[in-house]
Image 1 (cartoon, rainbow, N blue to C red):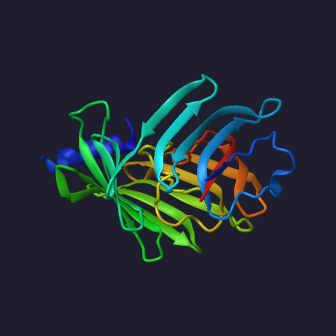
Image 2 (cartoon, helix red, strand yellow):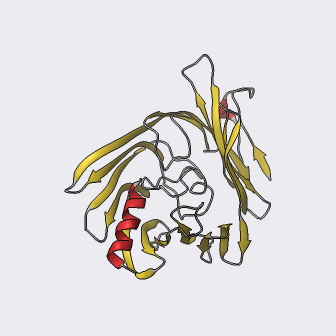
Length: 287
């Protein structure tokens, strides 16, 4: 039972009531000499095992994006078993992005996600419903995620806060609003000399659809520098660290026009990064 599930139960008790360009290791010429494009964004993240002879594909997470720059489908594929792990076709109606009949996002006039309505267990039609509200500052960065039970929309039971420095998310903290206890926090460090174009979102707390939507939909501005290290800590009551996950990002290969083509992710897997430890390779869709 994960942290969010426990918090939801606790909250319930307390409230009582087009030019897609893919670059592989077979491409001729050094990767750093490749040109991606003028206005592009990540459409696929492939992860590879580099411990064997040569790079061995482990899988990928990818999005179908149409000519209007709208994400229409998200797929995660496991190359080791040759199976689809997850596939979902998104549908749109005005400001609403439907995941399915019971789950959806709401967007603002800038197409940023401002609300998620979801359920604790998507396979159970009677499962507990809750909502997440996304708050941005005037500079366009996500600064809070506020959690409410759908049955108690005025009582926040959980809040995540993001802190920034120099255009980079440097600290995250998630607090149970019922007990006041810190549930999780994180420090994020960056590569000072790498300023990528349209790179990864880094929200270390993400545990809702982590591999599926958080890199392809709009959650505000991205970090100025490339991520170097993520350290996430989870806490038991009394501010006691229960476990931690530390990941590093090295060996960045860049295109000539400033996009990340690949990086080596070491250490631990991160729930907020839709990949496993190994080499991450990025494909882009250009407008």
